[in-house]
Length: 146
Ligand SMILES: [Zn+2]
Ligand SMILES: [Zn+2]
Image (cartoon, protein in one colour):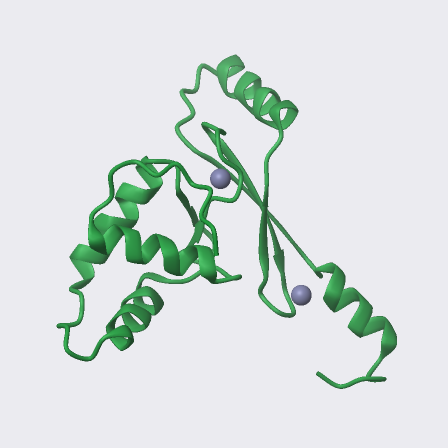
């Protein structure tokens, strides 16, 4: 698997968490991250939650990950180079989360904030619905289970 991310300097824990988030197709909570990393190597001590939270914060500061406010969970950034605005489509059936970003959206939201004299620091848009795979499996209506 190739990693196209031009990562800022990450320590071992941060790199492992980033790889985990990239591999996951869904948002992971901090505790799911801890569980997954603790299960990796039994010889290692489980990671302390503050370590994981710090690492997640570092990834977010570096633009490598985002937090989904509504789910209190984290996803790897799939669209590099966007500063402020991240949008997510979250499938209510399977939980798959896709990131989208758009310059038009970002400038619109930036303008709205500026008009109100508001200094926006982060924008997160969450669209809920069904992913294309789940739409198809719903319309097939149990033709092929699973
Ligand atoms: Zn992103
Ligand atoms: Zn789905």
